[in-house]
Amino acid sequence: MAGELIYAYRIMRLPLLDAGGAEIGKIADLVTVAGRPGHPPRVVGFVATSQRRRIFVSSSRVADLNVDGVRLRSWDLDLNPFKKRPGETLLGEQIIDQHVGDERVSDVGLVEARDPRSRWWNVDKVRLAKRQALRRRPTYRLVDWREVTRLFHGSSAMAAEAARLRDMHPSDVAHIVRSMPLTQRRQLAASMDDERLADVLEELPETEQLRLIEGLDTERLIGVLDEMEYDDLTDLLGQMPQQQREAILEAMDEEEVEVLTRLLSYEESTAGGTMTPEIVILGPTDTVAEALAEIRDPDLTPSLASQVFIVQPPFKPPTGRFLGVVFMQRLLREPPSIELRHCIARDVTTINPDASDRAVFEEFASYDMLSLAVVDEAQHLLGAISVDDVVDRMLGAGWRLRHRRQDRTYDAMAASAATAASNAAPSPGEAPG
Image (cartoon, rainbow, N blue to C red; front, side, top):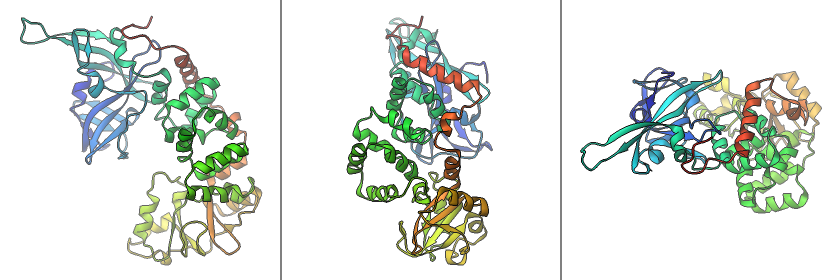
């Protein structure tokens, strides 16, 4: 439907279809963010009801939008409840039925836009309705979005920028952040939710992480740090001044502090300094079905979800005696009721927490592993090292600074983001010059 005007109210009556065309929900609303100066408001996604939940569907995941419905390009569906983020506006809930003088917004007209990476819809027209005393039916007129900009500027420029970046990969967002002045970086960080900011921090060198979080109050900072992976969080805490580190640890949950204190006790360039305790650990009498349920966790990286670590109790690091691993391929071949003790690969290599980075690299190179168990002298499982963390170590601490995509799209986005922050939003009722 490229180039055609399609109305938001009409979309909010369409079914949500999977990649095969089967109905899996209903579209309930459209999520928009304010455009950068001179650009129209943009639809970044849809709110849909599916399995009795309100969920978010990114516009980048939509393959087609027509009279039959909104069809997804893949079979995946994120069923996490929708939560409106700063900078976002719901067309149905917040725009339609709003008054503009003595008129009322009756609908919003959209047009499709594309670039080589994605597709989305821009607000193009707004339909206004006006009731007159001598007429039973209202009169309508269609106006350009520039005539009613105040409807779409309910948040700061940086809140809107954070919303526009919500579905980009964190490493791409980090590239944009690195291209911005420090003040604007902090404004953008303040506009992101805790989970998103944590993801972006994990893609930045520790020195830049420290500069970015410098302006956050303690409560907000603890919320962000709680969302970070243990290995990344340990690296960040290790770079902090001692007084700041102690203040943060004092404010955190006791169980988390115990884990972090143990991780911080290892030298940085060792297996213990690289490992994470957030892995799938089960006992020998647990079943294949239970193991499959555990590795479905979307927060696990593919490398850590590729195998289950089997130990004697207790099951939190440091665990009881390490018995071996069960690989995902084996889980897929076995009946769900089979106990894991029948599936264990016992001849897998392990490494001591004090082993050097070089020793870790050699183990991965020798055995073609995705993750490596770290055990102490008594064979208690302490955690595991994933191949992605090994690659980070091999590239060196400054690789993110050296890495630059040879892609003008990202450079342009970074420049545009900086411009958006430095330009004030138009005042209510005022069209951009």
